[in-house]
Length: 325
Ligand code: AHR
Image (tube, rainbow, N blue to C red; front, side, top):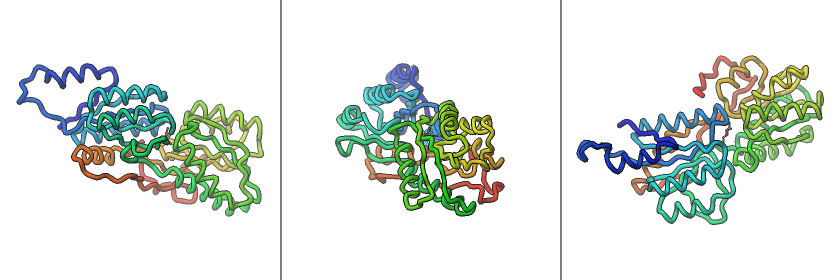
């Protein structure tokens, strides 16, 4: 069965179609297996666009009707979308929370309406326990650990005695920002060579990555040994700024990124990025299978982390498969 993907403006039309059956006789209607409301953060990165596309494709594959809303980077838009999903009585709600706090009220409303909520990609931090059913997303802490472990190996191989790091972080108070930073800092804590000189908020955006890098270069100039950027988008924004300032990324400065989108992998192959930790956006299959189980009243796993790897200048770049996002 072909799934129906309903974007924001079509919600009312959707209700009409569901209620009146689009003029067809009742026996001709194909009942969707499940109606899933998904609130996506926005389109801030190739990762996010790949994640949205994957959710749409998997919904189609599983014959699930999707009400998909793009919140354009605003928490209030996500809250409004979840309220609309409740009003439409969707079977399951899924959302990728832009930040961790501020969801208690709307999640209580979903719980009172008896609609299970699945967290996709990012986590929430709520005052009340049990407002969400499960989380399908990367282990962001481990991503930070993998980035730091690479850096320790690299510093060893170059015989570095002092390592000056600047960090361009993702959206403040978001799970990947908090966890990637914690994993990175915790892993470096035992190594006296490592010093994070500054962490600056790049909001996961390419334009902000460029701005942050300009400001870091003005302050620290050639004392920067390492740029640790929380996503590919910000890294791709930062690289031209490093070049404009007269440095060669990948050799004058060690560049570490996270996501593993095709564009960043191509730049790693050119030698301008040294390490990219994978964060897969392909969470749609697990989401559809979880939603179907919830509809059937079956138990689901509380946390599902995809397996992720790390791509570095230590490996043969020809072995890296096309990324698909
Ligand atoms: O939450 C996942 C992060 O959000 C990805 O690393 C980033 O690219 C996206 O915007």
